[in-house]
Length: 459
Image (cartoon, rainbow, N blue to C red; front, top):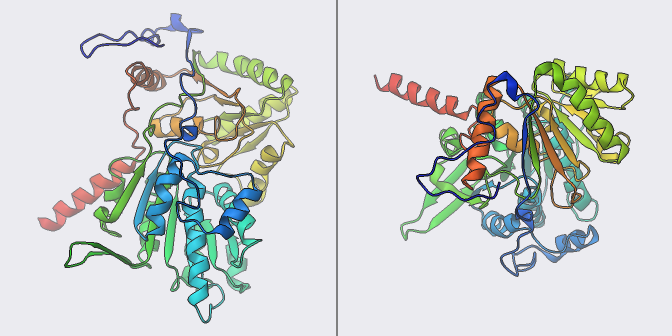
């Protein structure tokens, strides 16, 4: 890589002949060519100049966090002002603290002016698509609430019926959980949302894809998200505030929320490197036949284990994810697996075993690719190459994060026809130094449905 091309040049691709069987074992690498975008500072902003209270800054300093990342510099003032905000930035850029710091500050201020706060009535609500991500966010928030006067609670599914029949009642200021558990326990009256003033959707693109969208929109109708323009022409923010955060942000996403908020009320905070490949992490693409993949995987993982480099392996299906784990264990490599089809009991603690260093190899489906923050992973292996461009971005983002080892890398096994096409799109974008195309997951289906419904109603 490294060549430049004019507008009219035919761009040669290393993967051009990969549809032919003779191309097997061929490979190419996108070498690192820039430092991590999140570490590229453009101003001398501090958390104090961004408006963060000294009490929160004190906790940050104890955690060794002394200055904001680029995305935090842009997002924090917008959220503190009360604006509905859409944060779209590359993985590992500090989005969690970008929304969490202003939310915690708001809660501390709201509590000062409140006479009474009823049990199980949060002021702030964070919704994520998965148990592991919710738990991770709650861990970060709890590190602040242990030292400051507000309470954090983590809520997830698994024993929802028991919680409904035998509920506990606590003083909850910040509630963090998965959509299913929040919806059930709110519908049955265990939690009340009437005092919520700020709702945050983490991994918003996933929450708004086909698997969640209808359920999410039904739940969000509980809240009055208001946005008005005064006679003087200035924006007025009232009611409940909404913040969206994700590493991929399809252009159609604001429209997917059209029934809930006014799309024009969203202030977009985006990174200049959004929807680009990680410029600081080498990414190798290897053309393999399906029968060649196991041996190649074992060779790579054994090398990682020998040099004590933690590795995450991604597969497209639960069956493959489970097989990869079994295959590696049978060949002397300790590996745990994590997928969304597991029961809550089986999933509990799986990712934390990898995080804590109990095990250095984890086999995942895409349940492990969304938002999980690990600075341990030095190597991401796509055993199955993803189907959607958004999935490639999310998977790669599990390595090369702020605080990660400088030796991070990504290896992709490429087999099927559709996989080769996606690889060629990636290679072309990188050679042109352009953003990756079609980062839309299946949100476009939501928009199509909305347009069709509108046409039917008009007819």
